[in-house]
Image 1 (cartoon, rainbow, N blue to C red):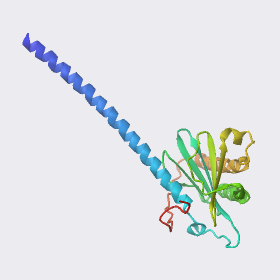
Image 2: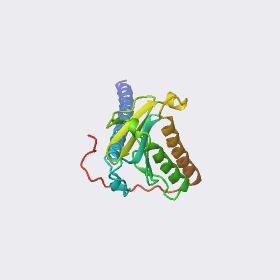
Image 3: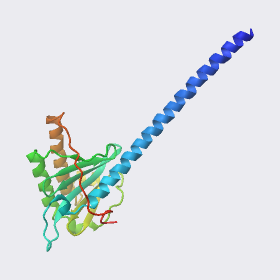
Length: 213
């Protein structure tokens, strides 16, 4: 009889050990997932700050010393549970990065329509930055889209609710349409080249911290 109790007790302890192990595994996976998410978000913020710190000459883009000229337009919004930033430059280059996978994706430089969409967006940005706030790089509010325009003199920003932008009651609807047009071209590239390799070049910034901090 004692042997049966020992067998029963041993089996119970074994099952309890399995449950504790599975619980530990789940906690470990959850913790690892949270660490990855936090790491990606930190990397996203680093890329965001790196972009704010850029000057036109870092990218080989010419500007005029006697005229304030926009050289980059950033559009930041929520994509599902992630934050995503689309960046268009005056030379037609496009970057896109988000807080889920913070690597800096570079648009296909051979895609003429993407390049033209970026240049068109920059032409529009040139006429909008004068109405924006200077050096406001605060966090994106839920349900909003925020725009940043970088010039050879300063950084500017403005934002509005997604609802106001979509129903065209926002003064920034035109900028949003230009950003969405770039997004459409990126989607076309992804559909037509599903296996195309994305290159992640490094951009050297000549300052130790963002220019607007």
